Structure formats: structure tokens, C-alpha cells
Length: 133
Ligand code: THU
Image 1: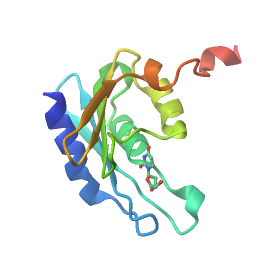
Image 2: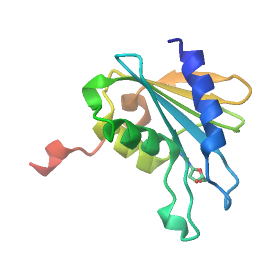
Image 3: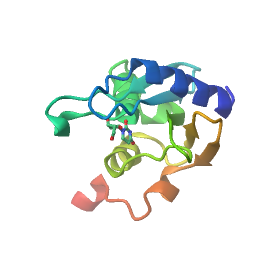
């Protein structure tokens, strides 16, 4: 699957967003080696800290279906932003644990702008489980 197709799936997945407070719809699409694509959208709550981001929901959705880090190939994230939508710090930390270092991360917006990156670029000097040993 092309990166632009995965980005389009992330854009479509914004329709599943529950974001009555921010009104900022984010969609994510996670491509696996077998071709399966798991979706995620942001789900908000009136108790604001309980909001869950789109990209974390996509990763957790895949894991709840038996898929794991080694199965993931690419992750697209999309929102209506001027520049391709960049993941928040909390999501970068989660991606660094659950998504492979050589996996492609595709940032997108509704204008069709794409930025292709990876977790080492997004979160250099990451804290990891190795630090707890
Ligand atoms: N949001 C995401 O879904 N992903 C990000 O990486 C940035 C922020 C959501 C959380 C909240 O529902 C809304 O965008 C505004 O912050």
C-alpha cells in the first residue's frame, strides 16, 4: 500500500473521532505486514485528561486484535492542520515502545501534504524499558 493511500485512510478515519470539546478530529491508520490496516481516532471526555489520541487508539486497536510491534510497517496520522499533523509528546513515547524503529511514520493533512519520518527523528534520546534495568 502506498503512503498516500494509508494517509487517505487516516483522513477517512477522522469521521470516527469523538471530539465535541476540541472539535479537532484526528485519524490514524496502522499498516501491518499482512496488509491489514487498523484504524484509530481521537476519543475525548468531559474530564479532559481522559482524552485518548488517534494514533494510540490505532496501536491499541491492533494489539487488542493480536498484532504486535514486529507486525507493524507504517503509521499514518492526519488532521486539518496547516502542516502535516505531528503527534503529541505522549504519543511519541508510546510509539517508541510499541512501533518498530524502522517503521515509517506518515504525517498528513487534508491538503494532501505528507511528511515521511520515523520515531528516531520524532523522539531522539527516548526513555525506554532498558533504562529501568
Ligand atoms: N490529538 C490526537 O489525537 N493526536 C495527537 O497527536 C495530537 C492531539 C487529539 C487529542 C484531542 O482529542 C485533540 O487532538 C486536541 O488536542
